[in-house]
Length: 249
Image 1 (cartoon, one colour):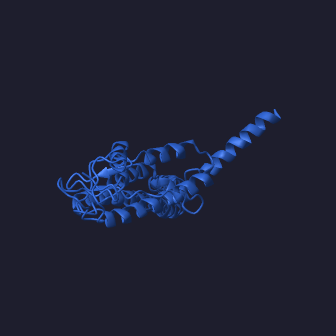
Image 2 (tube, rainbow, N blue to C red):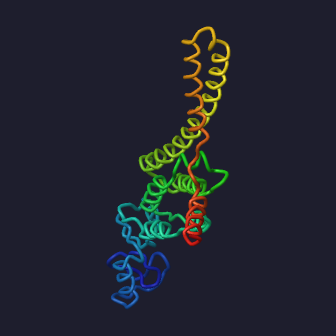
Image 3 (tube, rainbow, N blue to C red):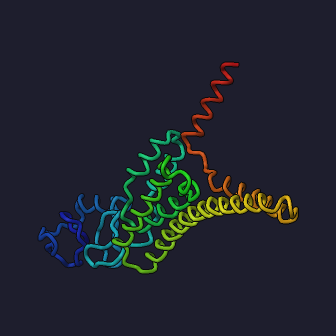
């Protein structure tokens, strides 16, 4: 039986609720309503002690056990579906920043996995000052990780979240590092190539040829290092310009 006043699980022979003190009345409409809400998924029954809890509870308020094994909240997937349909970059950023991450274990995992696949490390490394989509994802991933550290009791669960978090930051750092290696390396090779060509091209054609190769490689490295992914705003602007040209013709 469950208390008709507070919903607490009762002993079979209980006459008063040991939670709120209300008199036990068996088979009341209130009890039926609680059972219906459990079936509808509005509230959740603790699998360890039977305590009635809100659906998004992470721990049982009665026995303290972590609540696990529920399906991820549909709002996580609906959020990503809604995001895919939005073309305006500013609205996307606003939606990402404003999305409230649920406290449930399943939702935290679901959000972390989807957010990490949406984060583009190369885009972040080349556009973080011009377009904040990648920056918004990174900030949200950091926020989700911090929430997991507070909410998760199971060290294995936290370790899995931490692996995703570390991979995202590792990819970001590697993309930024590669960018600067190409830029600095390209500049060094261009300088070395120019010096070799100017010093040895007349007297020693073989060494001069090496200088030309270094010069060409350095130029390519510099081009790839400075190259960046186009922002969504730039892509949208290009589409507008193409449409204008078609209309003018």
